[in-house]
Each structure stands twice: as structure tokens, then as C-alpha cells.
Image 1 (tube, rainbow, N blue to C red):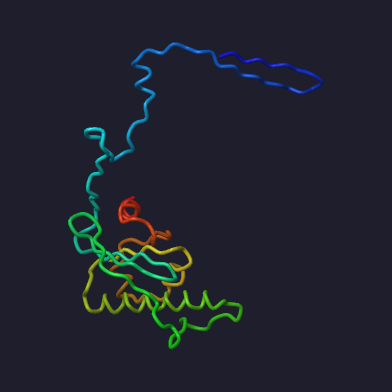
Image 2: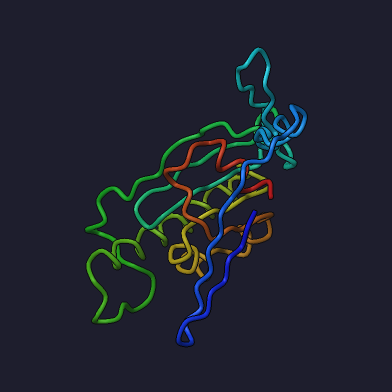
Length: 179
């Protein structure tokens, strides 16, 4: 590699030219990209190992936004889709507490759905449907849900993440809660 520097009227110009260097075959192989961690190649095909979540069996996982929620259970070391929660008809319900006058209808609907999620979690916790809970929600929704959670729910909360993963594949959700 050759570096040229020239000074003209207090302006510095730097030029770099790359010379061809002969590399050994071993050096060329070392420049090949390695497969990402956790990915194995067998017969030139990627093989992804089964996820192995460190959470006990039957841990209840809720991935939510202010518009929808997906529920999962830890089964056999990975997540198994359990169901979907949608706001439904929110005309008869409202957000918890007083809502500011500058709140948009969408923000009001999201706050109402956050209240519904907190109520459903309490209902399931009180019935004994789960012993451990992982709650993943976008930061705004998590901020809405957190103060509404009953003590019975927070006692079972083993992980809380402020991330938007609602449209992510199950593998990405598993990876996120495993870190």
C-alpha cells in the first residue's frame, strides 16, 4: 500500500493506492466469512439448532403492543404459540384513571388495551394458569401496563423487556428473551 500526501495552500490531500499482494491459499480461506454463532453447515445447508430457553417449562410469555398481544408457553426448551389477544370492541371501556385532553383516540385505545392486558394477566394469575411470566412489550405499552399490574402478577414476573417484537418470528423472540 502506498500513501501519498501533498500540501498546497494549506490544503492537505491524501491519496491511497492499493497494490496487489499475493496471498497464500490458507490466507484466502481465512478471509472467508464464518457462519454466525449457533449456525452449523452440513452438506452446504444451514442447520439451526433447536432453541434451548433457560426458562422452566410452561412459563407464560406475553408479547404485546398497544394494539395486539401474542401469548406463548415454554415447551420443550422453545416457545409454542398459545393464542392472540386483540382489543375487540373498546366502546364500553376506557383507559384506567383520567386521560389527558390532548390524548388522541389512538393513544386512548392503546391505554385501554394496556388495561385489558393487565386485567387478563391478573385473571390468569389468580386462576393459577401460570407460575412464571415473561412480559415483552414496546416501551410505551410497557409503561402503560406496569403500574396496572396486580401484586399477584408482579410476583410471578421473571423477565420484563421493553422491545417491539410483536411481528418478529418466534426464533427472534426466543433469542431476545434468552439474552
